Structures are given as structure tokens and as C-alpha cells.
Length: 372
Ligand SMILES: Cc1cc2nc3c(=O)[nH]c(=O)nc-3n(C[C@H](O)[C@H](O)[C@H](O)COP(=O)(O)OP(=O)(O)OC[C@H]3O[C@@H](n4cnc5c(N)ncnc54)[C@H](O)[C@@H]3O)c2cc1C
Image (cartoon, rainbow, N blue to C red; front, side, top):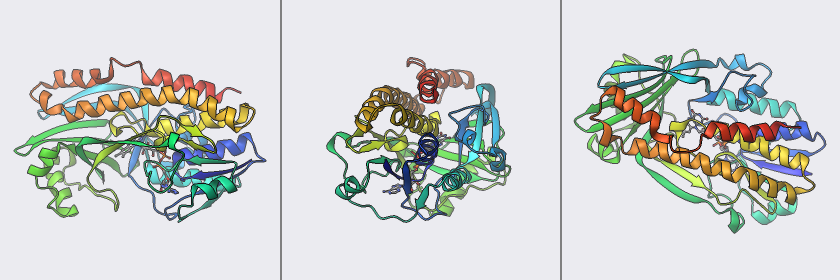
């Protein structure tokens, strides 16, 4: 079996590595469009303590401690300048995205999986001629490759603007901060992901973005303006942006089917979900492990992809519903901003309560994917 994985992010890397372990004789390689050094984003939160949590990609590394993961067990909501501290209910693990991706890449290479960088897109016909299976793990970038019509993406953009900053201020809890000024409400999502750095995502409505003239400011001036908005949290620490991480509206990419013919989608390429539920990487890991399981246990690729479609699509739909509910809560937060801290916290907690629990569905799928 000759497999090409397109995209060397968490989904593609976990798939390639675990598939090679399950089928050492298979020829698996990875094509990545960026250079080896280019990894987008600051830190992410993952579930549980490695190596105990199988949805945490650090659990697949020999020495996860080398990535200096930060364990977070408290959630702090700040509104009207008052903090409300709660338990997260579960242990969360903050980690630098770049360090995670580079460690997973090194593990793939050590397992004999070649990774080619700066690879230009090739045609669907060429891929079909050369490979038995093409695993599309290229995240939300969806324009480079023309896929079978059944796998066409559906794209929707959120109404809020957001930007993914890093900061040297250490946030020891998962922080959700609401700060209002005469232009509107700014929301900060902040947590520590290494010994020295925290993620700091800023979100606001398009009206607030326009009134604060963020589009007109240079990147540095916009970061300085927001550092002043969040000065009570940041003190003298600044906000840093990365090339390629400018202001954007969150893009939700969805597909009606995961696999068709010789093509199969995993991770964000299959379904992206708003960062406020923090489960994108978990979905990448779970969909990758489920694909490994179906390919390793079903007789032939067609049967494996049928089984993968049947099992992954209900999970993907539930993930989308949770992510959309959460995104909508943030997009309509102006309606609730007059509430007191306790009421706003309760409303935040309840934003996904009408849906079946996502964690149960993730763990059930993971249980099947890891059964031998
Ligand atoms: C602001 C923000 C905060 C987030 N916070 C969290 C969090 O706290 N926890 C969490 O779990 N998730 C979080 N996520 C989501 C998480 O980053 C993604 O869900 C996760 O990275 C998906 O992994 P992936 O491998 O599917 O895609 P990606 O990580 O996007 O990797 C895709 C790879 O494919 C490559 N590629 C793209 N196009 C091509 C092509 N044509 N050919 C070859 N290679 C290509 C890319 O360069 C990249 O290396 C966040 C997302 C955002 C935007």
C-alpha cells in the first residue's frame, strides 16, 4: 500500500506515525507546502496529562516533558474588572504548537517516513496514478487541490474578528477576559503554554474593530493598543503577532463526506471548529487514529473508507454544532455584557448545554479507534 499524506500538521503526522506502526510494510510519505521552519500559531491547549490521555498528541512522544507542557486546572473569567475562579473540571495541557509539530515530525522521520517540504500542489489525476490512498491533512487550506465533488468543502465565516497573539505574561489559568471601552467589547482568551510564553487571542465584533480603527493601524500599533486595553492582565508585557497571523474572521470548513475513491480527509481539512472550544487538535488526533483503525482492520480501502465515513461523520457533526454554538455565544456577547460576573459565567457555561456532550462522543470514538 502506497500512501501520501498531504500536510505535516498534527493530523497528518499522527496518522502517518500510527499507520506505520500498525503496518510497517506500507510505503507512507508526507508532502508539506511550507518550509521545515514555518509552523503557524503560538500555543494550544490539549486534553489531559501525557502519556495518560490518548487524545493528547504528546502521549505519542517518548519524552513529552522536553516540550515543557503547562498543566492548567483552573478557569478564570474576568468581567467588570472582577475575577471569578472556577475549576476546569479536567486537566488541560498547554503546549507550544511549533514544538509539538516539530517533535511529531522528528518521530515520523525516525520511523522511516519521508517528509518533503515546500511541495507544490499536483493534480488529482497524478495523485490517483501514483498512490493507492491520499490522506488530506492540509488544514483549512482548501484551494490547492481539486477533489472529487463528494468531498467539496462548505465554507462559512464567523462575524467576529480575531487575532492570535503570544505574550511573555504567564497566565496560570485558562483566562477569559472581557474589557469594554468607548469602541465596544474586547475578549481575551489567554493561557500559559511554555515556561516563558502564553497564548493571548483577542476577539471583537466587526463594529468594535472598525470603531477602534484596527484596520488602519500598523500591526505593531494595533498590538500596542490592545496591550493597553488589557493592561490590567498584561501589565508591561506586550502582545506579539506572527507573520501570517493577521486579523481574520474565523473560517468554518465542513464536508458532507470524509472519504471517496482514493481520497480521505482528516483534522481541520475535514472539519474546523471555533478555537473557543479548544478541541481542534483533539479532533485531528481522533480522526487520524480512527482512519488508522479502519485501514488496519477492514478488507480493502473502499471498505475502510466506508467504515471511516460511517463513524467519523456523526462525530464531526457534533463537533461542528458545539463549535458553532460557542462561536455564536461570543458573537452575541454584546447582548449579555450588562450582566454581572456570576450571570455571565453561568451563561458562558450553559452555551453548549443543549447538545449531547462532545467529550463522551470523542472518548467513544477513541475507544473504538484504539481497540485491537
Ligand atoms: C486561534 C486558534 C487557536 C486554537 N487553539 C486551539 C487549542 O487551544 N486547542 C486545540 O486543540 N486546537 C486549537 N486550535 C485548532 C488547531 O490549531 C487545529 O484544529 C489543528 O492544528 C488541526 O490540525 P491539522 O493537522 O488538521 O491542521 P494544521 O495544523 O492546519 O496542519 C495542516 C498542515 O498542512 C499544510 N498544508 C496546507 N496546505 C497544504 C498543501 N496544499 N500541500 C501540502 N501541505 C499543506 C500546512 O502548512 C500545515 O502544516 C486553534 C486554532 C486557532 C485558529
